[in-house]
Amino acid sequence: TSEVRWLVLPERPAGTEHLTEEELVPLVSRDSMVGVAKVEAS
Image 1: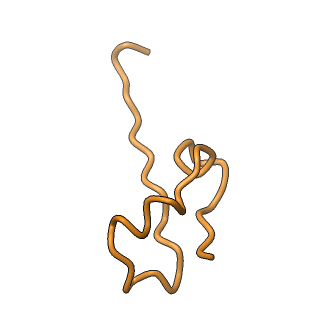
Image 2: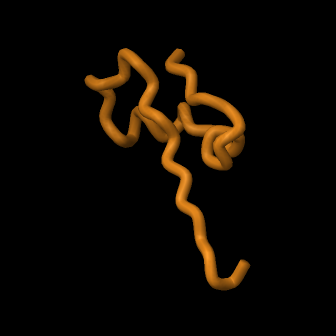
Image 3: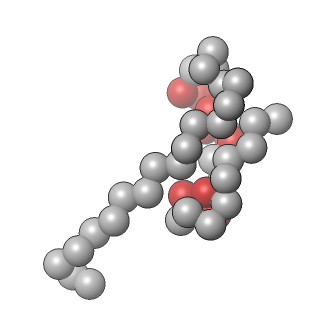
């Protein structure tokens, strides 16, 4: 509704602690941002 907003943050994939923000960006998909898929590290 116009009164409620949700912010979905994808869970950080295991083994990506060493990656920079720029390296993580390509891993995030539309589905992971809406909460219907997990981000998979390549």
